[in-house]
Length: 258
Length: 232
Image (cartoon, rainbow over all chains, first blue to last red; front, top):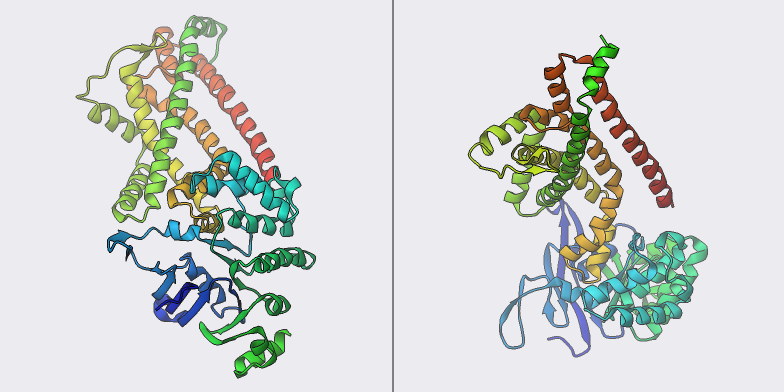
């Protein structure tokens, strides 16, 4: 039974490609509580991104369950609180999960402000004026208020990613998912983006972060998950994982990246 | 071949060429408009997850691209519209609607097949990350298409659509075979009345060239300007 604070529960999640020849996710189970900052680390091709993308069904798992707020979102139908069978609408669940991508994925034909207000206006039917003032407030928080009317092409990588983060925040998600948010950035811009993510973590936002930034993982994460070959090999607090690794695979990995 | 007497005779019928020009332009503009709407539907059907829709669109496109325009035009005019009694009023006072309309239908159906492939390529050229970002924000697949994918795709393929307009201006000449009073119809009529062919053809050539050459130059200019804005 789910605990009161549990937001996402993943049960026996599998994602196979080429009829099972490639197991990107191999029987992964994990539980994320409110306020958790889960940092997923591991070598390339270990299934970190696939795991993250399965949480909001950008990747449809081959089998297993993703339970978000008590509802298994992988199923076509769910039973609501009145006991009625209702068709699942993934769009509604996705509003509760913000996502930030490695390549920012800002909409190039819209200004920063329009990028941010599009979903609140179209999906939440928010008033345009209200959405814009909210967007400006968030832009102020990440130091980009003066860039509101710029197009994505006019921004640096770091600025783009900060916009992408506040664009996701516009929907007031319960969970934020970060898919290697600094991997496509110039080294000198990594800091400004990590600072924003860190501030967000400190504000109590529940987050799942896939990253290669080990120092950041240690500093910000309260739970570290180490994945390899589609499985969770080791999990624990930052101290357990970084100072006292158990499995030879994790020791080997940390030896190479630290 | 050419003679000043011949030109003098032909010039008496210049009104036919002016009308032909208006007719050719209306024919082409309407064809691009309806062809584009048809093409958009075909492209979306072809990319649809619903298999029968996709099969239908694929079959349509392949059929229209694999058969001659003239055959399609004759089938539309002599077979499909054979029994239909179209209102026989005159557009702009001279274009016979009952011939013009089947011409627009045939050209649009043909052009729709070609344009749909251009649109499909345009949609597929948009980075999949755009769809993922939109969907992750909670936009439906329909909203993602109309708000994110199509605006970018159509901007990318505008030059190709404009080129299709140039192609249609030229190809619409085939409609003279069903008696649509476009430029080639003016040539045929003038020939019948004056027994001159070289001079009317020369005028027709000049009119077509003056239509298409500047148009394609203007397109090329905008194409260059637009691609400049996209450089990162």
